[in-house]
Length: 126
Image (cartoon, rainbow, N blue to C red; front, side, top):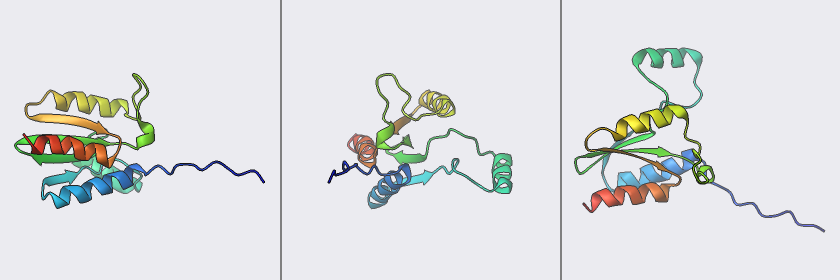
C-alpha cells in the first residue's frame, strides 16, 4: 500500500496574526488592527468606504517607544522568492512606501507571528 506524503500544515494569516496579537497583549503594548480586508456584505463595504476605509493599509499598528510600527502579516508559504512580492499587493506596496517615508514610522511585512515578535522586540530593547 502506497502512503501519501505528509503535508506540512501552514497556519493561515489569521492564525498567525491572532498568535501575534496574544503576544502583544502579554506585553501590554498599545496596538490596533486595521480591518480593511476580507469579504463583507455590500452594504457594509459601501458604508466603510464612505467612512474612509482604503485597501492596502497594513494589518496592525503598534506604538512602541515613541515609534509607530506597522505590521503587514502574511502566511509563511507566501514568503517571496528572490525579488518576488510575496503576496503583497500593489496597493499594499504603495501604503508601505508612503508610511516608511514618515518620521518615527516603519512598516514590516512579516511571514509569521514569530517574525513579527522579533521585529517588536528590537524596538523594545532600544
